[in-house]
Length: 343
Image (tube, rainbow, N blue to C red):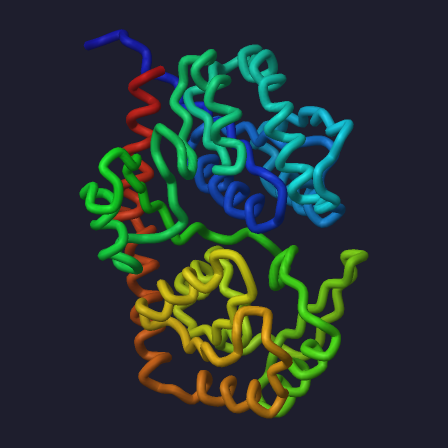
């Protein structure tokens, strides 16, 4: 009988960047890794970019006391080039991540890997090199962990991982859809609509005749809510995280992309038979969409039996992907086995 002790479980340090759309997926990964007996350290910048982020982190840590937490003081710019608090935080974080090396190196259990946000990937890479550990991130030189699953976008994943897109692009490892832990749900931290458009959206929701959850966040992080959550996702603004939530639940979406990569996200999900996308509404420009038109689209979404059936199939595929023996579960286990062997 061998007396060789089993290697310790992997110790993963997670470094998100500013914005709820960046923070929330990392908290989900932290919860998932912790549930698989990994030692997890959540690394966050101080001060946070908003009270909402700070509250979210505190709530998560209260629900997951086994997760370690390291806060590091960011170095603010003496000559800022923008007044956007999110970009200022991105810059400050990138300017300061080198300060993390001593804290991570001093951990009682050696760090096995760093999972970093793409916005700080290039800055944290030297820290990973100094620690002698791999850096799993988005758009970096190691691996890309993505909140998606193979059956959701098989053609895209096959094209990237076969080298047909870029020869030297790191492989994408689909580990989603990530589970949720939040007690509340909102429409994101950055997308804003005009007061006139908000009134028309409210009118459209009322005209549809369906129950709905109305979440409105002001600049002071106050929320107003009314009515009940239905079994659809009317008027989402096309965040990738929101789409994965809808895929996991198997419910259809009325997509309304507003800016950035949200149009690309909407196109991907449209191909996956999970949504209706009314392109004539534009992407946050070009006037106000009337409440009557919004109401008609919501009714179309909720009464489209074919779409709802296809969405249920997406939900079934999502559950299979993360179940024991599922494709995403196998990918994650392979990553953890690799890190365990390195210990």
